[in-house]
Length: 325
Ligand code: UDP
Image 1 (cartoon, rainbow, N blue to C red):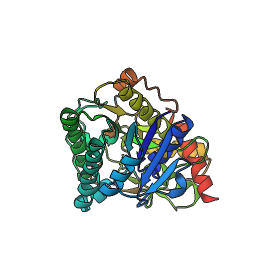
Image 2: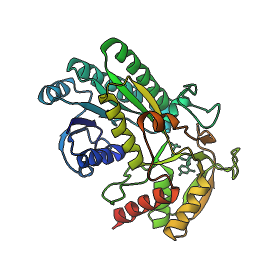
Image 3: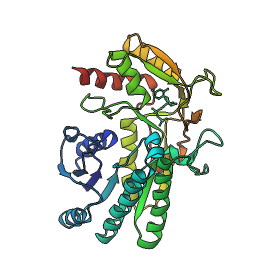
């Protein structure tokens, strides 16, 4: 049993992570400022409401607990918002993360798992995208994550802080047991929005562009089940505990699905009518983002369990129905 700090553990990915860590018998402390997270999504362990910008709080926390690892999910994630409010993104995603890392170094905590993103790659020069693909982010959100990846390299060199950066493609789905799911406000992600159109919570779903260079003209993404994503985090921690050096891994299923395919699958899974409206392209959307995750499979031994889009949507649908009741 280890002691893990989960920063941002009240959010979508963090809350699933907390549940999985508790299941594995670990001692979990969640730190979350509840700016976007939900207290009731933290299903156990210790909960502290607070911010990683608060040095005194971190100091106290690290004096009180001897953590074997820190997982960091407390970032802003909306591309469009990052273009409008770059200061907010650089402050939270970069400056506050450096405060956290700084305090970890002071407390001699040597293992860090970082939520990175496919957005660090920008417009892909080739598909699938492996770890060596050029990092040329095209918006402040992607840049904020790429900056921290570089900070982490320097922190390993200078202070011996070892880390794994996990570059998520499209995190989707929900806890198969129905206890947790996606609760972003406002919701911007495709799968929950499509399911809200299926349940009647929204009148329709807008497809952002049908003129992309893809077989059906809509954008292709690599959707990865939240449980598989969390499994990769557990494996990444073990990898660091075994003494391995810092690393970066791309996490996706390696199979792309178009927006239209997601809508068709949601119609099949839910048996509901889903009204589709065609809209213009959304700024900054690459036509295709598909991961090459061979590294994670080979080095971490990662094996996605819920790779099928049907299953991802079934679990998200279970959650949508529960949220309505
Ligand atoms: N999308 C869409 N309508 C929506 C939301 C998203 O057509 O209401 C498209 C979006 O343009 C992208 C894909 O769905 O091609 C996935 O978008 P999402 O925001 O879920 O994730 P992203 O790929 O931006 O991380």
